[in-house]
Length: 126
Image (cartoon, rainbow, N blue to C red; front, side):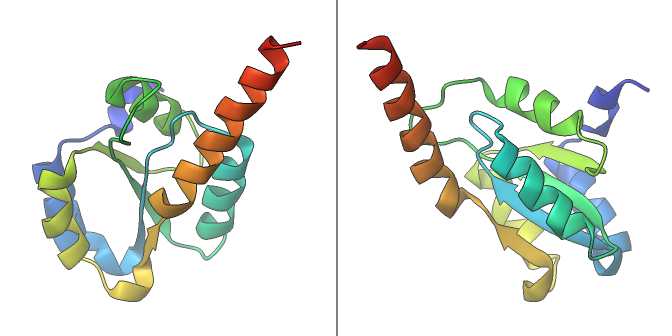
């Protein structure tokens, strides 16, 4: 299977949300860069028995392109749909899901990326 087929446009994601929101968890985040902590969190969310629709947002200073991050997330077996979206398509998607079926991961993404950047800088300064 070409996992890039999991990548859908926001309009299609809204259709799926209207049809299946009770069977999905909506996860938002930057996934820049995709780390094991992301994978562990997505696995944890998937264990609740629902499918995962992941929205890949743009961080303030991206390392990877939105498309590259979407393809990395789509390659994960536990992810059913990936929506590369700016803030423009996010509001309608959030409204299509019950609040308890939404996991906003971008809040913890920025500190993780800063940690990674600092680690790389320390390794290069040796």
